[in-house]
Image 1: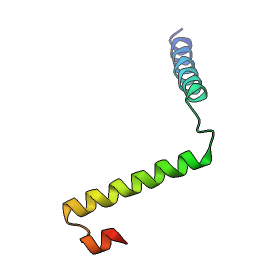
Image 2: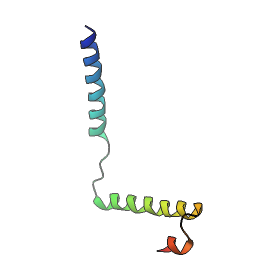
Image 3: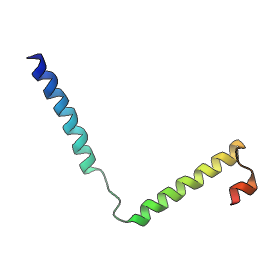
Image 4: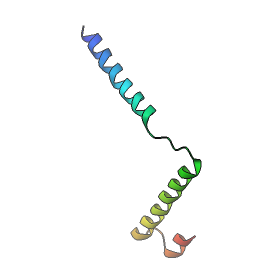
Length: 61
């Protein structure tokens, strides 16, 4: 009986994550994805420049 309860619980958890993946919004346009990546890269450069990891000249490149 314990085995079946654990198996059913695991199946429910798996079904939840699979269902959540299926209903998550998928970018329809590749340019939206590329723009999001570009913005993330720019924010990383700004953070590195603020921390002093990059100089202003390196950040401009």
